[in-house]
Image (cartoon, rainbow, N blue to C red; front, top):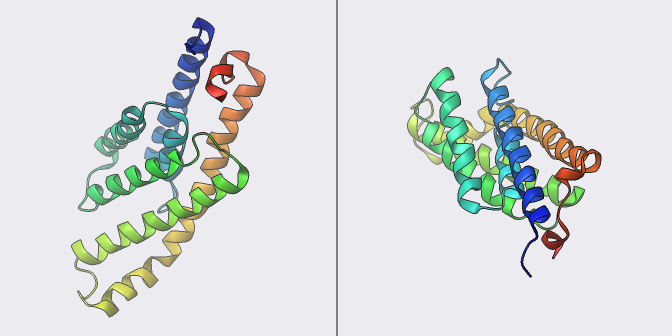
Length: 184
C-alpha cells in the first residue's frame, strides 16, 4: 500500500520535530551541568526510536555530539562516548513499533548501564588512573559508581521530557500524528 501525500507530510513533520528535539538535547549538553548529567543517552534512544531512516538515526546524534564537542572540547574518551551513543541509538530501535512505559524504562536502564560500562572501561584502559589489573578495573567501576547514578537520573529525566514532549505534540497537533499507513 502506497503512502498518501498526507501520510508523507505527517512523516516529514514528525521527522522534523524529532530532529528538532535531538538538536535541543544537543544544545542542553553544552550548557553547564553536573558530571554525566546530560541528555546524550536520551537523545540517542529517541533518535533510534523515532527516526525511520536508520542511517539518519545513527548519524544525526553523532553530528550533534561533534558540534557540541567543538564548544566543550575533545578528550581521549570521545571515541568511546561516540561508540556508546551508537549503541544507545541501536537500543532505541527496539522501541520503534512498540513504545510502552515498561519498554522505554528497560531500554533507558540498558542504555545507562552500557554507557557506564563502556566509558569506565575506557577510563581504566586509556587514562592511566587505575592499575591495569582486574582489581584496578573493579576499582575504576567502583569509583565511577556515583557517575552512573547521574547518568541514569539524567537519562530518566530527559527520556521523559523528550518522549513525553513528542507524545504531547502528537496529541495537540494533528500534523504530528502517526499516519494510518505507519501503524501497520
